[in-house]
Amino acid sequence: MLGSGAALLGGALPWVAVVLRDGGAAEVTGSAAAPAVSGLALAGLALAGALTLTPTAVRVVLGALQLVLGGLIVAVSVPTLADPPGRSVSTVSGITGVAGDESVRALVASATVTPWPV
Image (cartoon, rainbow, N blue to C red; front, side, top):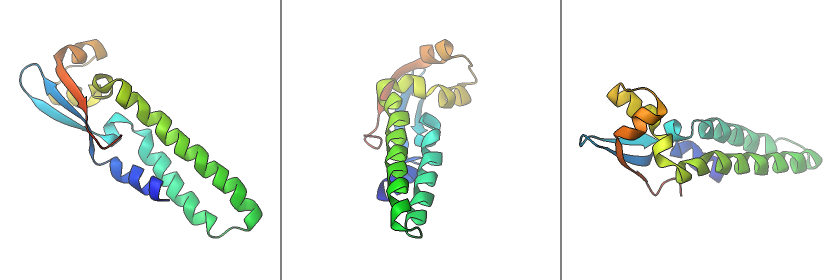
């Protein structure tokens, strides 16, 4: 439950700090960098509540499902660490009005992962 709560909170925090070639800057939140994290975290919180109400035999199955959800949260977060400029395309596009992955990447001078998703 603690992990799901932290993941849900992380959706509102900056994951990537972007500096544009024209000198502008932007912060990409977790919900923009990895949109599936919030939904998976909510599912994890709901599952934690269900664990308290179920018989022991069902808890084993739900516990395994909770582990799967945790693994999925990690799996959808890792691409942000691997490709910060790629995960900032939607935010930069919204700021600049430029569309297209390659066009937006050309505008980014640097994209640094903040400590939160790590």
